[in-house]
Image (cartoon, rainbow, N blue to C red):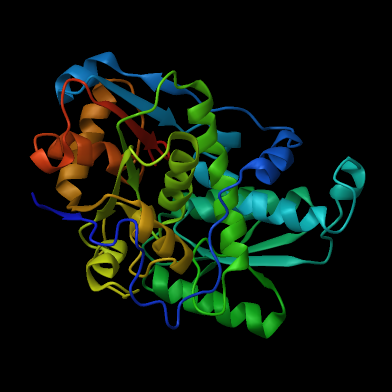
Length: 359
């Protein structure tokens, strides 16, 4: 079992090299996203729970878990992202208060994405709400269970590529060839606005947390794939609680895209084997997320699969259902709580996100 931890040398400054990076910044104001979300018939606030026994086992004052398994019936936080981006586009076509008109606002449009599962579900669900079609590309490593779920949501599923990166390249090609809307939760040179809109939806869960916590946490642990969740929740934490909260970003050892980019001071692609943290197994960072986290995150951590799988087993004994992807942030707390750098102890108030249920 192994891990790495990096104290962010760019904290407060940001990247030293932004040439060839995506233009723009992430959205930090939740107002627009909240307004659209309130009009969704399945919108609801997911639970934030204090786990007293886990707090004691980890040696911290309080551990709060934001539980995203029930989000909009799609099983993960991703439901907030692509569906919000699609709704935002639909709102430019017609009156958002005319529900009948909204149902066909995007008729004739097709949205395409590459996905490790949950992002595709959000694209599929969002497309059908507004009369559009969804095409989702899955790599060979994505379980067939996700393909079945996607088809049940009305998406066309295409198996393409040995890994997420190859699926992503294929989705770009198909979008260009067919005039479809590419909707990724990552951003790169020449592509940023759709990913910004996806991350804007993720702000909702961060503000739900802040609305009910009686005092700010001392630490927030955030798992990252391309970095959308981590950037949005870090933004929510900074807007609501300021600069004193320690933000720790956690990635798979096999996919340390943010970790290595921070170390290099610029966006870098990484390589590695497949990780059991499949939804976090992204070898290239989102540029918008990277730029924000370079300035605002305090620490970057990588964990191997065995450590996270151990945490998933522990959580199950406390009746918390999570995949390895959903539990990576908790796992960093679980296994690194004794590191003096993180200044964790009996007075610490820790927030983690269980970003998806068991898969």
